[in-house]
Amino acid sequence: MNFSSKLLENAVNEVSQLPGIGKRTALRLVLHLLKQPASQSHHLANALTNLVDEIKLCKQCHNISDVDTCEICASHSRNTEVVCVVEDVRDVMAIENTAQFKGLYHVLGGKISPIEGIGPHNLTIDSLVEKVKKGLVKEVIFALSSTIEGDTTNFYIFKQLEEFNIKTSTIARGIAVGDELEYADEVTLGRSILNRIPFENSL
Amino acid sequence: MNFSSKLLENAVNEVSQLPGIGKRTALRLVLHLLKQPASQSHHLANALTNLVDEIKLCKQCHNISDVDTCEICASHSRNTEVVCVVEDVRDVMAIENTAQFKGLYHVLGGKISPIEGIGPHNLTIDSLVEKVKKGLVKEVIFALSSTIEGDTTNFYIFKQLEEFNIKTSTIARGIAVGDELEYADEVTLGRSILNRIPFENSL
Image 1 (spheres, rainbow over the protein chains, first blue to last red):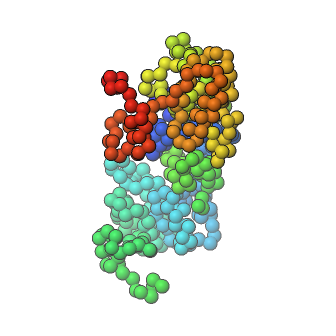
Image 2 (image 1 turned 45 degrees about the vertical axis):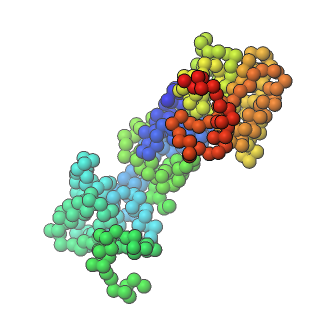
Image 3 (image 1 turned 90 degrees about the vertical axis):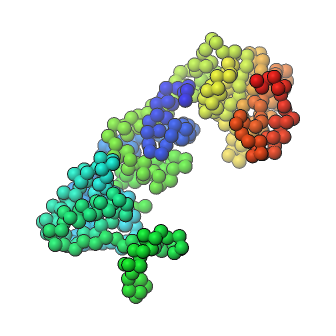
């Protein structure tokens, strides 16, 4: 691309560093900003700068937070003995939206993935083990996505926690509510039969 | 969406103002930035701020530029008597990439579109008419996209320039190089036959 302006080129280059945004899309976004009042770009720039400069990770659950201890960890109405292990803040948001979980979270910050060079020590697993060692936790729920990386991470943590003799569980795998049976993959369908639940529990 | 952090929420809201980016994509982009070194977000924020604060429009062709007169208008090797009318900077970049045009540009900044509330006076048509009136221009090439808005804009400008008795032309419509004839729409195919060119010119 031949740009008529260095400023434009620079902005397009920076925007196109974002995942899934190529040069053409970046140019479209930047030209859109140029058509808006300058204040919109200033607000965007400030929001991003403030975010990276001031964001904190909760000291207890490692979730993204504005303060040292996040709202969920600081709440008195949560059951501190049940900890749900998730990958990142999006999973916390998703589970919070269901309003079905009243325990605390533990955000790993990723999954074990040798291909991407992420080992157990790049995650917050040690801090989880520490919590369990102190006897603060009675149940750990694994809520990672069921990919090879997710299953590996679950198993690694499970092994670390085995000696402490606490309850460990994993979220149920099965046919999603509203899904057609015929389109379900066989692994999921097979598990949903093996792990069937008493009918009265599903009402 | 329930955010665990105001800073995060604010950044997601600002990013999701961009066209084609919803809340979920915005969250993905913002979390990506949080995983990168803070300098990347600073560079992005600075690039956007500098762009909107310092960008200029070339006084002659109204193209986006870092200086008062853009590189193309300032060049001595361009034919100043031929002016190509385009919608925005992307079209200038596209035509410059072909290396087939050695005249100047005139960037309208949009197309006449009553639905979006864009009339002739929101565009730089008056400045084009002024140039022609001064006798500086011998040919005007219309290179707007062939939509209803593009055709309307072409016709409006054509009517404004009629009295000055200069050459006006429009870019050729026809079957794109490499396209299969059978998939071409009938209007394009019809025009490509009506406006056929001597075979030796196509070599």
